[in-house]
Amino acid sequence: MLCLNSVQHYLIFWTFPTVEGAWDSCPGFADYINAGGPGDKFEGFELKYRVCEPVSGSGVAIAVASDIGKVWAHLGPWIKGYGIQFEVTAVVSDAEFAAMWPGVEAAAAVE
Image 1 (tube, rainbow, N blue to C red):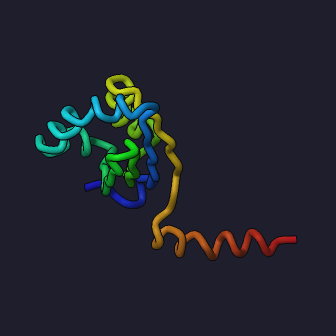
Image 2: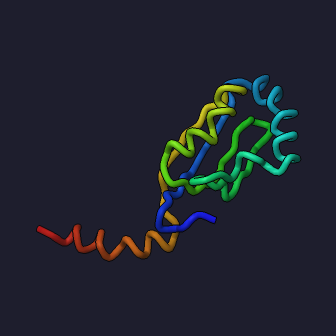
């Protein structure tokens, strides 16, 4: 398990450029899931949640990672193998937001 203090949360959106590409990936994705998602957790990276919308060939995931390079390493095989397009955004959890807020509020009050 990753230590919360040493990781960043990432919101990951993905989409296939074509419906055919999405369809072609289905057997490989099903095999990956049935194998227990072997690339979903490794040193410095853990995929916490993934949902997909199979009709449009899109989906969303939440991951925690020690750095963006770990996210890229996780996504690399999907980019190379299936041409999936990803949008990755650094985000904070509710607890992180609450912990950060006093400092942000104080910085905003400085004139």
